[in-house]
Image (cartoon, rainbow over all chains, first blue to last red; front, side, top):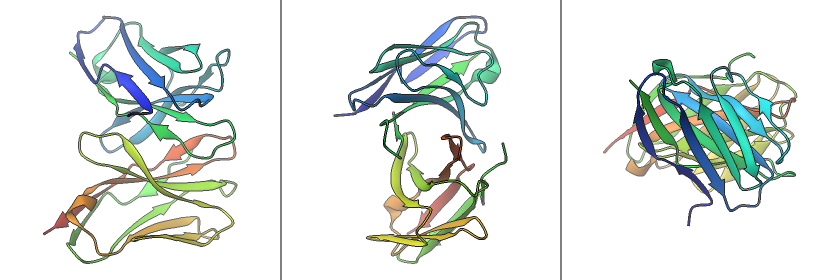
Length: 112
Length: 110
């Protein structure tokens, strides 16, 4: 059973549409993260959260927003999608006193 | 922030050893990691090393850490076709954020 799940796994949308990507975890971890991966650029941090009331911007937060609805859920929204947001998006979790991030399987988003 | 540097591509024959290198940036990084990404899949943690160690061995994997040069390497012994993937190094920086390299694609030739 996957500990970190992401939905949808693939999405194709049009410029200007609002999109929400969801992440759920059963690991009981407090910390959750959203990254995007672009070919040849590695992973870049979009937003992260250390608990339900905590939201922090990462390196590339412009054009994105997040919501930490519960300890187990962290969603990423694109209010008005644009083509350069086409990427692979990963959610990750980490325990409060842990040193390792665990990743979900990724969501491939294409904005036309 | 500064980039974590990795070379981009490595091809290796099945059965040989592979060595992947990484240069990280933050001398206060406490943990350094190697992640593996197979085609179409997420990132799988392979191994990690604490900054006060200089070597860690885990079955076919050997991690070497040179803190003076901020250099991290991953050696895979007896490379197998299932080792074909993109390998990312990452550092847990002093601001408690994980910074990734751009990845190194390893292709294993049967």
